[in-house]
Length: 532
Picture 1 (spheres, rainbow, N blue to C red):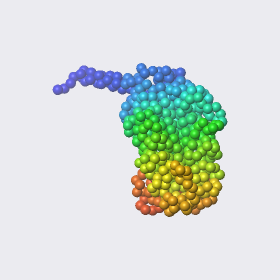
Picture 2: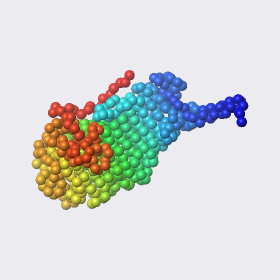
Picture 3: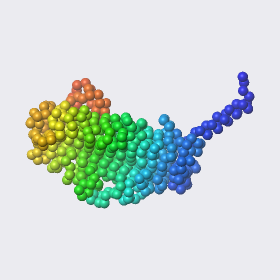
Picture 4: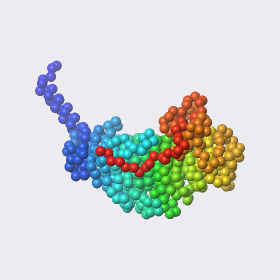
């Protein structure tokens, strides 16, 4: 039957009306006073409009799935999302050129996505730690007061499901000075406390600085494996990443990789009230497992109070199955209270610590330990292969349960200690037993393909960036670990592929030589740039 023209027009009108009535705005523009600024020229709104729940939904003028909210100029009022996107149709909060949220952040954050879902916060240009170079960011979230009181969070992302935070300069939130006044509350760059536990929570390509904790994540689901932290730069930070499993959640996987975790010395204080870490994973009530920590550069000035360049704390024997590979620790520090080691990993019974192709260089002359792999209970297993470990008072230490912890320890390069203290220490309940290199090999029945050099400046033939020299004994001296099936391990820290089959790998984080005999300092941190 042929429809009349009037009937067809009526159908088109109803369809168009329905589309307008149930489709959110494509673009929304926010400036501090609602006037045109930057690229916000079409009906710009104020922060108060953004913060009103009546302006969030599926209406044609509302913020909803698929909407891009462009922030222009300096926003001096904290912003709080009042709704969610949908799967595959996120809400994007985007920063215009040189836009910032500069406000008194408080405990609700300068920007909050709390209890929402499918939201992307994007600083506008790709930045962070890209190809091992620090690239300045455009969009900024920071406190308007350099010494605020109470808790201060740059971004509050708690209970935000399938949320992503990228390309942002976050900080300063609190400017600490060594030996200065300590903050009165929690100071965090970005946090999820807890996460929703059923989706992803991605933090990547950001520069986070001048806060106590840069990134804080607390799982809250039965099988939470959605956290990923990558391509970030942190500096002037007490702790770069904290994963606290103390909220009835079960962490079954998390990825922390390809980051540059830098200086912490400005958070020093008398008695070491702050214990500096690049990552602190701890669990008091529920199991935390499946962490992979890889391709990270940990450098800069770490002052007098570093707890560990990596600290994975198996409280109550609840941390297990940790894989650490292709990382470089090159810290400058003068520890006054450090005893945990530059790397400190503890696992529970049945747990596995896998420590492969890392480069750990201590501060010659200090009393610290390089690598502390331990378990408070029997039944854990430790593999340590293809690592350069040098410049510490003790190179590898097993704690509490003795040498039975070690499964495969081989193809490592060890450098000299700062004094006559032995290479390796095993601490059991009855005290510590000290070994020189040959007695260590005999006691642990391990390291048959490893080597030791007594020089205090021996770094495995690498320079101060960890890159191997062309004469390095680490080249072609490692085990081929392709058979382990760890995809990321089959390339080095720069992404260079390692050989397949049975061809020997290089020892340490880098597969190829590329270091200069004239040491090149690590990439600077704390730089800012104006983008026009």
